[in-house]
Amino acid sequence: MLVEGLMAVAAAGGGAIVQAAATDAWAGMRSGVARILGRGDTGREQAELERLDQTRAELESAGDGAGAERVQTVLVTRWQTRLEMLLELLSEGERQQVAAELQALVEQARSQAPAQSTHNDFSNATFTESQVLGSGTQNNTINR
Image (cartoon, rainbow, N blue to C red; front, side, top):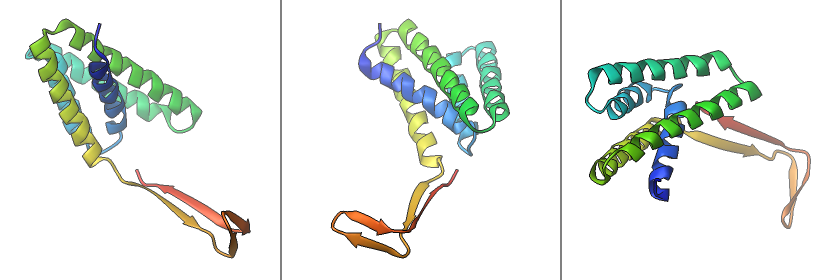
């Protein structure tokens, strides 16, 4: 059984794979994950590349909305489980090395992720103590 820290790395990796699939970070994430899971075996690495491409295709076909959120959740869980299984099979030294490689991929993907911003516009609103009275608008923009 994996220790909590390694499970967290696997969870972060699963989430990062799914998040990166729709961004410019995909190419680096795709090749890095395939390399990690392939463990030096060209055939295994190719199989992982195909699995990763299937993940991206599933996300693209899911579109937007509640159905897409369910697909994302399933895919994150699927990749987290694959990463946990890999980590469980490795010796302690290899496990730490792979965890570090995976963490580096997650950080790289996060640094390339589009910024998210929130803009609040309280035009014509009156502020009284800690309340906002009157009419106003709130615009939330998530740049992806």
